[in-house]
Length: 135
Image 1 (cartoon, rainbow, N blue to C red):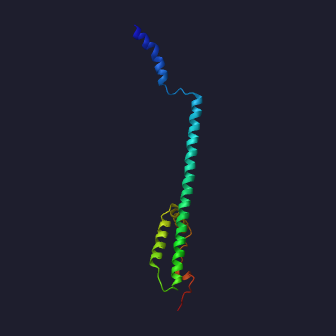
Image 2 (cartoon, helix red, strand yellow):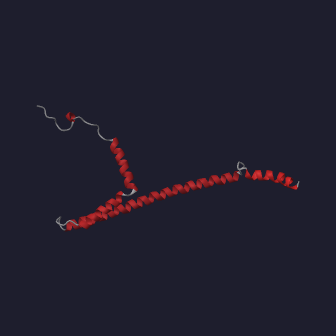
Image 3 (cartoon, rainbow, N blue to C red):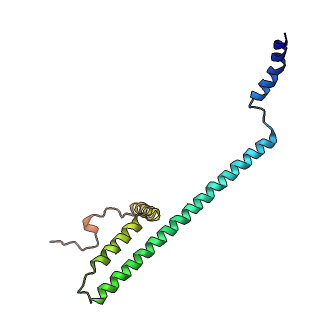
């Protein structure tokens, strides 16, 4: 009998603890604040990523400029009779590194899209800018 009484008394309490639909309004506000805070952190990390990409592009662009200047100095120092192969290789590597950046790829993709949109229509040969010959 005492077991039955214990089950009858604690079953409703156990069921209340299991019910997830009952939520404290303060707890709901805390959860909403946590969600906003997490979203803000994600936005900040995107800004940080953007700044890091810009810094990487800037560093690689500056390396390319330094490599081009070194090549030009050596080439002009020999009055065009000497080809500074090592400087040319360094310049090529700096340019390849610049092309690997996300900023370069985005710029290239946007240029491709605008080039396709502004592509001139096919012009018949008779109306081309070169004068046509008539017999």
